Amino acid sequence: MAVTNEQQRQFDTDGFFLIEDALAQDSVSRILSACDEVDACFRGAQWVGPDEAFQVRNALAHHEEFFKLVDHPDLLPLVVDLIGCNIQIRTSHLDVRPPMQAAAATGDLGAPGSFFPWHSDGPNFGYPITNGAVPFMEIKVGHYLTDLTEHNSGGICVVKGSHRLSPDLIHDPSFQINPEDIFEVNVKPGTAMIWRTALWHCLTPNLSTRTRKCLYYGYTHRWIRPSDYMHQPRDLLAKCTPIQRQLLGELGTGDTNYEGDDLAHPANRFWRPQEGDVPLEDWVKR
Ligand SMILES: O=C(O)CCC(=O)C(=O)O
Image (cartoon, rainbow, N blue to C red; front, top):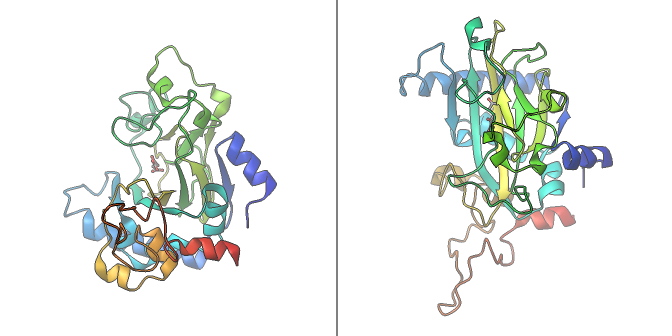
């Protein structure tokens, strides 16, 4: 529907691509205010100090501005093109990273034991490794809301092409990441990154004077369980469109008969969707 040949090539080869101005500046400003509201609400309650990095999971349920990004009209078509239509959100998170002391920049980028070591995303016990790599399980859309154009401003770094390697190598002391493969995501506010979460990633220290704020939305196949929720709050689901309901892990019809009526042959409708369960499928066909 939407992905260009060049984006697809970058996604397959490097594991990610960037979209400048994915969010307009007025929208970035509104989302930044939402970040501050959510931060004010959760940080104190979790005893996190004002200078410490802070994360809120299942962010989409905590502010209307975060919820709106679930089915962004320009980005969702890219996601669906890349991973398919039988998908849901596994996780959504807000990450807030205040400036750090320069001492935090000593040591190697992403070293084990550092403030943010190299890793790829996955559940406890890991994703299965198939032919030496993680099968294509998940995409994240990262929204960068603050200025990250300077080196060491707390931006994410990814290792190009690392989705084609086993994450076990991250912990192999004899394996050296080629410095030329490390890409520091130095971007303007409003830029989005679409990436495979099997990519190895870490963060640079935030030695800028600005607090870095960003949001992530991870989309995965619906036969995988979400990590942030089993079911989203009822009041949130009640206001969803069928597509939003699907993305929030429910059947698009709103039906709660998840296994069908055949007691002898129950069939989970995430695995075997019935008519209307995957509204994104109809949307693609339109
Ligand atoms: O960019 C960040 O602050 C954290 C990114 C990350 O580690 C993740 O999304 O898994």
